[in-house]
Length: 229
Ligand code: HEC
Image (cartoon, rainbow, N blue to C red):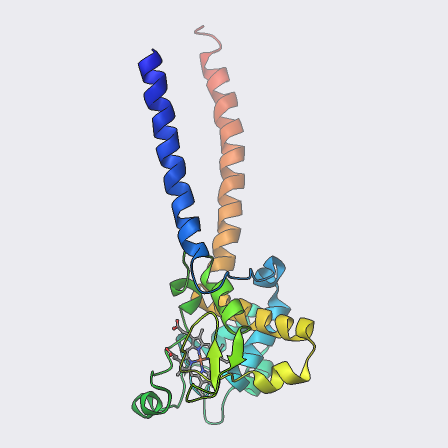
């Protein structure tokens, strides 16, 4: 019995060591990620705001080619609001694509700007969600004369992307800028998984159904066995 207890303790110690190891590893990374304010992730007004910021500041270089403009209706944007953020010549049924030439961009920045459709998921790691990575990344630019763009980033050291939100950061208070970036990250989080709202609603409906069905089945079981027992 003692032996079993000892090996049980050893197993617990080993699993604890595994659980702690990634956290220790993450702490050694370049920068700890700031978590995006959680309420932004389900706030449609924030996402709409983020969509507008994306179209004016990011679409010049990055596409969201897994999504059509018309799908912005899912975060509550009206047809007029969608048309107002679309670049000239685009149709509501078009995928959100950048007109930037990738080969040229690679020459300019040293790296082609990637499509950001799923970045909120692909950047997830032990340090935090991909959305937190984006939220932190856009807020950790600093001036660095040794870089070709004049900018470096604490979250993505040596990044090819310049600080495109510089004018916005300059003209806003830190809290306003954080909020603007939070809205943008919340929008990219939505784009990375557009079905997340309906998925959550369906989940609730299924749980409610199971709860009601459980009570029904239990009562029915009692009725069936009443005369036999
Ligand atoms: C002038 C062109 C340009 C603009 C405008 C631009 N980016 Fe970038 N972005 C880049 C380039 C180039 C890279 C690739 C950098 C690298 O890998 O070194 C990049 C990389 C990124 C990455 C990292 C992707 C990854 O997983 O590696 C994110 C996130 C990102 N940009 C978000 C944005 C957002 C949000 C905006 C709008 C506020 C924006 N970018 C505007 C050029 C741009």
